[in-house]
Image 1: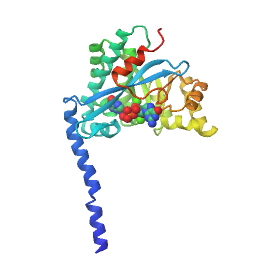
Image 2 (image 1 turned 180 degrees about the vertical axis):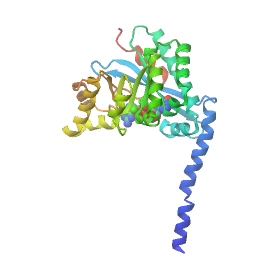
Image 3 (image 1 turned 45 degrees about the horizontal axis):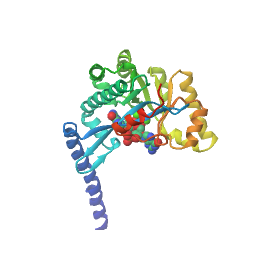
Length: 280
Ligand code: C2E
Ligand code: CA
Ligand code: CA
Ligand code: CA
């Protein structure tokens, strides 16, 4: 009886059932979230490591769910990618982030200000990204060079040849491309050869190593050197301690993001931070 009970338990695992139902429910609600105005962007500052001045922001998506509260992108972006909803959501993100950046540039002219937007594989191979980027740039009036599209290595695995073509088209628009979460994929180095990117973002998992042994820190040294050798702009992600910051600065890493400098901010707070910067 015990064995049978256990077998049934496996088949009808209520946790699994709940998780599956939650996912279906999330997918259904996500389809209406955009129209319901439940999505918004937060902006995390990117600082120059030499003087810690803000030189740009990364737009990070948030979903204010009516009953669940704030749902993080790690939970709903994968769902949106699977359902295809990410294409419509991504279009909105591009429009919103470029509109904000252009407004800040007009309000505070002369300050360097780039805006980074995350793009998922599904958008990249879907065929409409180029159009959505062009449309966002035209509508906002933002200079293409102020827009950085962040692509993860995993996005490049899907169909490398097609992706390389899409990336080249985007780059021809004048936007910049960043390889996100660099070092966490399977063959980062071969991707660097295959895809023309402008920015390399060193994943937080490596930045964390800067608190450890000299051997661990050597990995970050190698990644920064690689970026410098290839004349890419290097951004360190997830900087949380002054020790990490100091090591990165000593390595001559260009830019950094992380809780040490600022958490992702609401639009108004991000603009206040920008205002507080030393005048150009
Ligand atoms: P990501 O692009 O690697 O973004 C960095 C994540 O690290 C963000 O999480 C950010 O809030 C967090 N972070 C920043 N500094 C620190 C730090 O010092 N310590 C720690 N522990 N974390 C830090 P978030 O906002 O939850 O976003 C998670 C992921 O969701 C992003 O990872 C990105 O892959 C995806 N995502 C966010 N917005 C979008 C979007 O508009 N479109 C798409 N396709 N994906 C998005
Ligand atoms: Ca990113
Ligand atoms: Ca990242
Ligand atoms: Ca990530």
